[in-house]
Length: 451
Image (tube, rainbow, N blue to C red; front, side):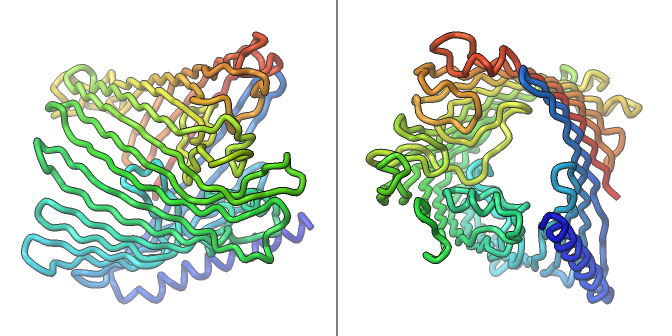
């Protein structure tokens, strides 16, 4: 079966390439623009028990076609090669976009097709889907409505795994497409309502469309809603902030008998909140200091971050997209409290307040130092191996990352990142088991080249 699966993926990859070329040929009558991006990621991770090496290359090809003064067409496909999965592919974008001015001072935007859908923070949701995204902007207000279907997205390009049935699908290499879900989102933003501050209201829902015939015992649908509010803007000439809160409701399946025979549908009452600060000091080597705090609610009786409730209402936040927190420690955004502090400089820039770059390519060399301190708000599950089931410790560990970023040209960039994670382990009540070890180390080299 692995050989058949490989050839099946390869055949579909060739088919995607043909579709991409045909699309370009069809629009040759218009002013066609096209190109590509090659990304390489090579990583090494070391802990007390193992040493792992990974290699991944991603080729993305894009086509952009301005049809007239109002409408454009864009398409992007990707090909992924990795050591653990030789062939992967996907369609990132295949959309028609329009920008209209129905009245002076107002703008109406519409995009239809395969595209990436996000919430106002891009922390809760940042996923591809097939649908429509419409926006209307006028003086002081920005309104957005969007809807998408995820069941046609290739499995490798999907991160929406919210139930036990989703996890089973992801482990089945014979499945090509993602679980079917309907996404619906809306937001209203009051742009610069007072003192250049922009508050907003947001609502997002996802509906599990999996039929009953595809559900095994112990598997159920997870339907969720997210009711949010946020605000952001400047606190000074070079100091900016943003803050948000999402209240998570919905339904999930609860294991009330230790995974044996009894499952009940329970309500979800959870939350996600966060705050971010960004301070720019261009006169001091283009310094940038940032802080982010994220809190995702947990449930002490939950045995897993995916459909793990075992008693009463489910109080653990159900994440959609999981942002990358650290190079090493980046679990699901559930039952988690994270403090992230980062500082970066461009040491070879002239001290001119950032208005005039220094000569030479070294001006684009940028080291960045990050520190993450991680806790869990309850003794419930965290999506990370090695957790001590008998521990009631809230502190999970600290990670320190050092990234050396260099972009000698606008279409070429490198980064070398090293990370050290120090888990709370070693004691009888430590959050991690002793065999986890005192430290974990990782090294990652990334290259991005556009053409």
